[in-house]
Length: 143
Ligand code: RB5
Image (tube, rainbow, N blue to C red; front, side, top):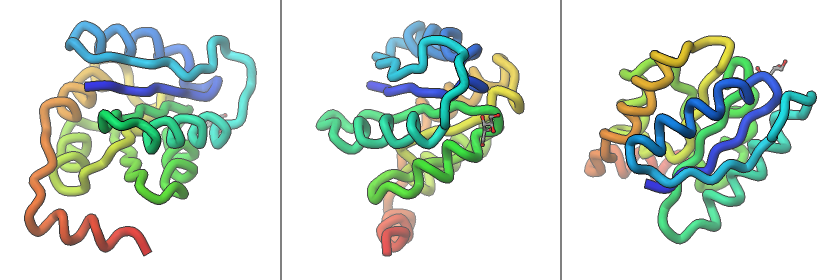
């Protein structure tokens, strides 16, 4: 899979480890920043990443990390075509793929440690969208 990743200052510390985990799983990761922990506004990075995900022709997914994951998910879900899921455990990560066809994963660096983050990534990558009745519901999300 191909991933774009972006954070704010409250999510940047865990980013190198997340990138390494994904690369070790064989995925391609494009880092959209920031590259240090200077204060930034999470919507700026959420919007930057969503535009890349929407423009990507290979069906890339996105990963957005802030302190709680909440600001990132609120911002990302303003984009038509983005289904951003805030997941703090493997179960919700897996269900967000299987039932919601989520294309952006959000979580909070202040909420999960690296072990839980790794299980979230694993669940996300291993779980395909089930389609069927879930596809009908996903289509109804956009107004
Ligand atoms: C930054 O302090 C924090 O507000 C931000 O990372 C995020 O948690 C907002 O939702």
